[in-house]
Image 1 (cartoon, rainbow, N blue to C red):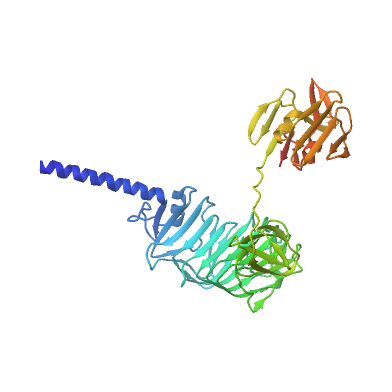
Image 2: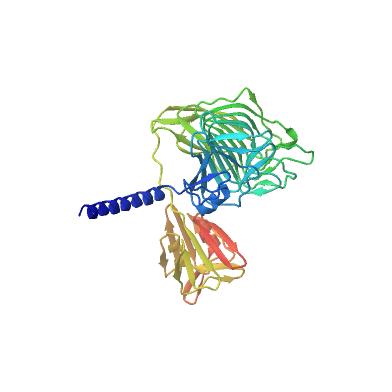
Amino acid sequence: MTRKILSMLLAVMLVLSCTAFVVAADDELAYYIEAGATGTGTEDDPFGTLEEAILALGGKDGTVYVYGDFPLTEFKAPKWEGTVTVKGATADSSVSVADGKAAIFFGDITFKDISFNIGKNAHFNPQGSKLVMDGGEDTKFDSFMHLSMYSSSIVEEGNFVLESGYIKTLYSAGGYCTSLSNGVMGDSNVTINGGSVGTISLCADAFMDTQTGISIGGNFNIIINGGEVGVIGVTKEKTSPEVMGALNIIFNNGMEAPEKFAYPEDTVSGGVFIIYSGEGGMITPDAGVGEFIVKSNSDNKVAKINGQLVYNGKVTLQPGETEVEWVAGEQKAQAPAEEKTEIKLTIGKAEITTNGEAKALDVPAQIIDSRTMVPLRAIFEALGASVEWDDATKTVTSVKGDTTVKLTIGQASINVNGADKALDVPAQIVDSRTLVPVRAIAESFGCDVAWDDPTKTVTITK
């Protein structure tokens, strides 16, 4: 009997331990690595390479725990999805890169609570991915990084964040590029939240005469929210980037520019914006040139810019230096964002698709006199506008919000809020259904209209 009871207790304990393991596995997808290992990635049987661990994560967010000192010399894993967090398994865990060698990251990666043994002229290179450095208060990366892109390549965007630790030099415009046709298609972002940086170079790194700066198709954003920065400057004038947007350098939370502070102007198409924001809120760049997002830390604080109170939301500024104070005031209630609507119609297809949901039409969209004509009631209802028909005058009236649109059959004009506008093709009746020119209708309600010629499809977005 005693043996039977003991067996039952052991079985229950085994079930409970397995259940606990499943819960832990659900909470965090994690693998372990150690130099020279040949295991399966478990805590007791680690992988021997970071590539194995990334492959095992299968595109999901997860943590890779490092035993001992792990070499990343010539690390070039294929592009991956998800965010990989590389973390020390013990207090003495570290990653290393040999003298003059590169570690290249083709996916989002975070280094957290881990030390760095970086050789002379060794470097990290996020290739269009997001790199977050959060090794710890006392960690040192005593070399340089090429941010956004590396060598002669083209990436969509660049994102770097420093949370803790020390980095000697950040080449915020990449490095080792041989043509200005390479670079970043969108924005390139460098954010310092904590830790310290010796130098933020606003140029690309180069060691050969054939190497140049890069092109940045969007904005070039340097955002200092905390920490310390020794120098922000133009360290190599011949490799200053060609910036199609703006150069935005923002000092939030009362941060001040370092004593050595310089920036390129001649190679920046959209102008240079230097913003000093005091404690009480944050200023962050938006997509457009000169456009920024204002966000107070409190409902009882508002921004004061150029003597004017500015509430949470978007603000447009002029190039040059701007001071932002945060003063007492009550934030205005924000209007709820209007839900986006996307409407698609294909020529000859008796169907309208609104936000992915298809609905049959009696009459398909068609081209008349080189203009795309669509069923009136279907397009108005898809836009959320009312429809009223006056049979006596053959006039349709549609209202949405503060916009009123009127069309009369056979009349080559559209009336929007009392003002007439000429039409190339009038509204007309085809197969007992009223067809109207889609572009004129959509634009009257503030929508964008796009045409895909290969598929003969018109897309309306609002």
